[in-house]
Length: 149
Image 1: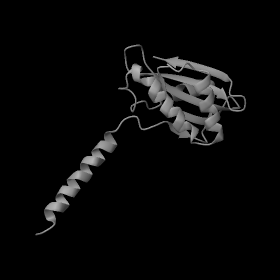
Image 2: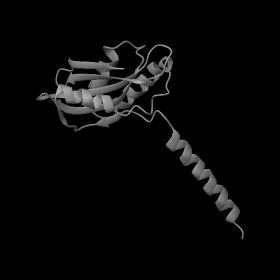
Image 3: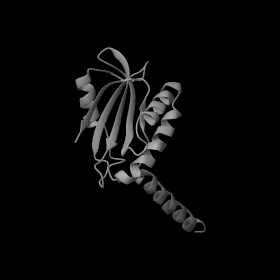
Image 4: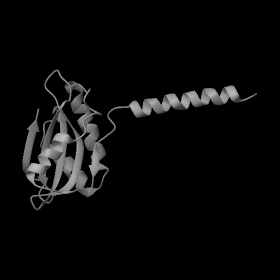
């Protein structure tokens, strides 16, 4: 039957492409524009369970470049997220071996805030730890931070 072989080859190529896409790491920062209400303690618990699977194999040496890309991505999410990305760019060293994995607009202890969860790693390692930054949404000042190993 003419064309069956072509369809089979095309199907195989599409399945291979889907495998590459689904297996692709470094998918980007998870952005939640309207998040939940937290206490500082529950925000820390949320950071502890944030998914870092897409960066866990990234070497700390490669983290600064990925961080820059993720912050550029964050700038596309609107003016508030862009201002947050500017603060995270300006106030943190460019060689920071930490990559944002989750950014959430939320309320923390009754205050509107940004929750930023980053994956970070030890020198010569990979991004296997988590860090939480809580920034006041209006002033963009840090109102809380935690680091988890």
